[in-house]
Length: 253
Image 1 (cartoon, helix red, strand yellow):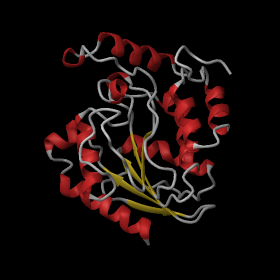
Image 2 (cartoon, one colour; image 1 turned 30 degrees about the horizontal axis):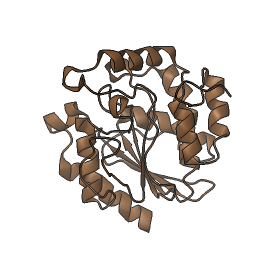
Image 3 (tube, helix red, strand yellow; image 1 turned 120 degrees about the vertical axis):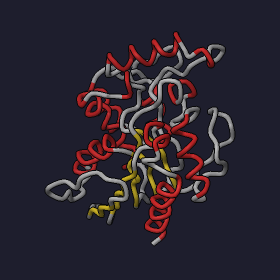
Image 4 (cartoon, helix red, strand yellow; image 1 turned 90 degrees about the vertical axis):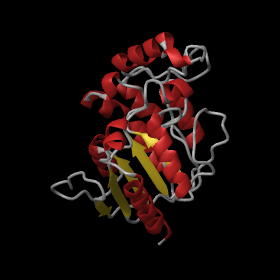
């Protein structure tokens, strides 16, 4: 397999994503393969342009400028799935949700729920550790205007499918926003879960339990931790805390 200058395996097509995801025997291998993905030309061009032009406040930093893998241990019973890395957050730091205001919200909430060892996440080496939760995104590259296309979502979906498959104790998925909610249904159908018809609509606090090959899996909807939602009060800390409290309750039952 071809590797780039930094040693990451290079994937250049949707078929390559499918092959690379299927061949990933553990999360470490999967994360390495995700980090070398170049399957979506528009996203590659955007993430790399941002990494060169930078935001003025981060002009002295070297941006990651790659797809951003998930974070959290393989024995997690809870997964949190967001939309995509932020241009000057995960695309800068190389760690999902790290270094932006959305991350400030989700990691503080995970800390309050007892799932993180600290309430902040500002850099890849800041000592953050997660317990019993894996955090990932439906699309692994920062997209222009925070808006991946359906084709980009579908091209990226095998990474998420394999990541969830590599969590053998998974019992709950907290889905941040409607984009992730939509992205999950084909992933879970492909994994053998029984999908209701019609598919349940997204909403904050929506709870759906699916029967599947590894036992029941519960999806919990939450408004995304975007600035648009948190600044306007559409999502509050108590609302997010309630969803995570329910997730921990279900995971331990």
